[in-house]
Length: 241
Image 1: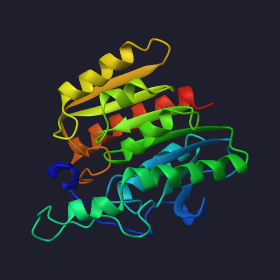
Image 2: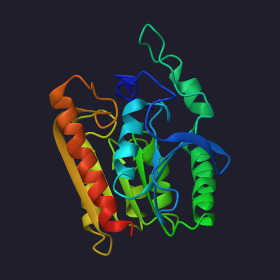
Image 3: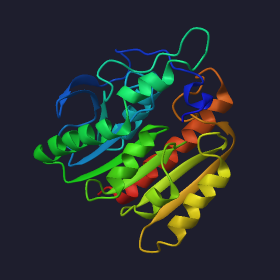
Image 4: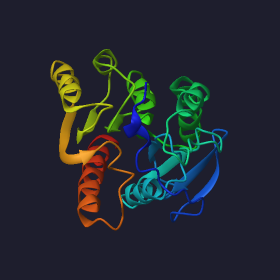
């Protein structure tokens, strides 16, 4: 079950944030940014707060500036998780039942199919928190060319053992969802798969969600988030060609 960290620091959602625009792709409303003529695409799979999170869209714009066409689908159909005012998690189990990774996995395959039908030749995917489970499932098949998982949750070492594409895992030192000792297990499983390129990094002094739920007024939080963004972008530049 998702712990309290999955819901900490909820973003203030803004449907007009970012320099891109929203339109349907694969049947889903999606935030699109970058050149639609690019043959290289990146799909960002959000955490429970959805595709209107400003920091997530800001990251999408940053990846697009490197030459990728970037898609952030609304896998929650306008119904992201909204924490109660009292900070309790009472509503989370019910919300998760209707927004599980199985449905998102089926939906993301539709998005990838739409991208390929538009002439995209190489696709990467990044998953944040619960979104990482969706990307791990993609990485087990031939849907994408590279994967990045940021402060991941809801998957196992066995999932990692089944990965078939280059994969980067960005973990947090302070994380109940995937604590450093679990991330180390992921790293060991990947090290045993010498045929798969991998990168595992644990960022010190940061908590679950730090790559997309940071306080923009906190210089140190911005700095470490940007370090993770740089690692994410470099992974895609090197492996989505």
